[in-house]
Image 1 (cartoon, rainbow, N blue to C red):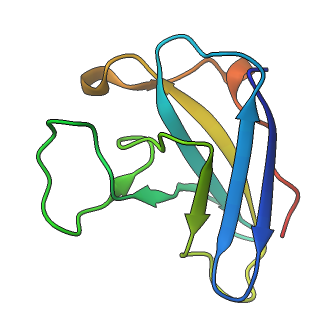
Image 2: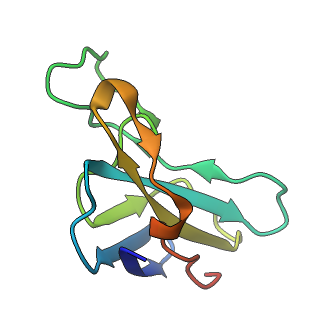
Length: 115
C-alpha cells in the first residue's frame, strides 16, 4: 500500500488531514481526498481550488479533488460541519492531467478513524 498512513485532526473551524507514502507512485499527479460523513449513504471528494498549470479556470472556481488532485501531503477541509463525524482516505490520481484516473485500490490509504 503506497499510501501507508493517513491521519485527521479536527477543531471547531476545520479538519486537517495528513498522509504519507512509503514509495513513489508511478504517474501520480496528486491525491483525491474522499470524505465520508457518518450516517450519510454516499461519500464525497473534498474540493480544491488549484488546477494544473495551463488549465483555464474562473476566479474562485473549485473542483473535486478527483479533477484537481491535491499536490501535497496535507489538506484542510473547511466543509465538515460542526457535530458531524467524518473520516477520510487518500486516493492517488494517476496518468496525465487530461486523462486522470484513480490508482488501483491497493494503492489507496485506509480510512482515518472517525473524528
